[in-house]
Length: 326
Image: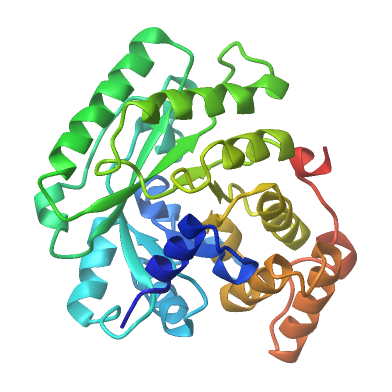
């Protein structure tokens, strides 16, 4: 079955984009950063964690729904689903996280995120080629010459290895987890400059198919999305769970600013109903619902499905992300 991702990227690059072409990825690769807590808590039980089997089942359910275009997983999860044929007759593209830099190491009691990101790769490219042809590579700029030079050299080495395989990649750029001496108002523009600098010397054969970055405000997103829209397709990451209004507001503002992809992990995984949430996200992106009305519609759908909401409608309708308020 032809994958919706390829169809949508082709239309976006041709300049024929409409909101129905917006790409959504379910990022269920949290085991590579959060370890045993990655699958999240059992609903209604704050002291009990879901298991790997629960996580795998949630991936399969979302794939079978056809609501997303990409399912991003760890290599171990992707291999299990590949052997089970989960993606064989699916329009969803499987993707694997191909590196796990130190700034995504969020082990309980750990303090790795207090230091500048260091490159690291668990997944071996030759071992992944039989599982999928799409992978994520992540980099975090820290405004430190030695660390950033090392990160960029490792990214170059990765691209060299990638050219010997059939794997294509997309590039994730995180905001640093600590103060790097750049004001919050300027950080998004610093990251824009570093992304363009990083990719300016990269040919089309080795370029990322799209980006995954934090939403650093409308102006910064619009600037990067408008820079080279046919070759540099911008996507947003989700970050913390937040409220449902945060989720709908984020996809709305980002799409309006020129983003064409949303790759959400915790926002989807920790929601009351991942499938209902993504379905409502699509309605917001396509202009059928405003972010505020989407919260009401989502709660109504939850009630009809017999699912208890985590928050009251009034609480869930609040925007809590300062960047979205700005």
